[in-house]
Length: 252
Image (tube, rainbow, N blue to C red; front, side, top):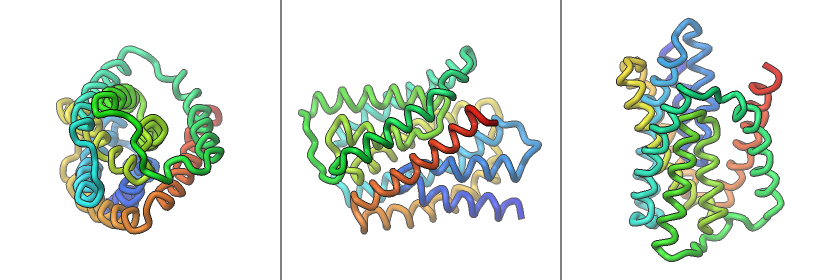
């Protein structure tokens, strides 16, 4: 029953993650409620082990249908990986409580900006040369990668928003790009957790299969329905993130 519960949660998380990110909203609470006595680090490590294949699979599926600027994105993925390692190291030295309280307000700003700009992310119109695009993408990668390693909630949504706002991507291309960078940050975290023995590999393997199935379904729906659908999902996921992070920061 425990495996069925986390596998179902992983499938749903894979679907949401493939469209716009935010699958951790489903999978992490499911792991904590299913295994309440487990060490948090082990559950976080198992979550990364279960989610990384789905994210990588979504990247592969998007890449077959969406043209991505790989020469700009590969350095950005490496920057995201390095940033995630640094963030994971920093959290051992600095208390993230200040960021925890600021996060719902930051997300609220992202949501209000997206709603105010009705055409934001509806059309794919990259606005920079390759060199500038590479630089901006790499800065996004290292900053949000650091955030993912240091704290984490909403990483995929931040990637999507910044690629839309700063590089002129539509929501579909931004989501595809976010999957690549999120795969890198998940990989960095997984290596760190695994090196400390904080991954239940058998459970992670079952979750990974379910996550890939959910990822396949989510990717197909996003590609079929386009940027408008992804934008709508982005608004929903960010709204849920605001409620969840606000509750965790101020009411729990």
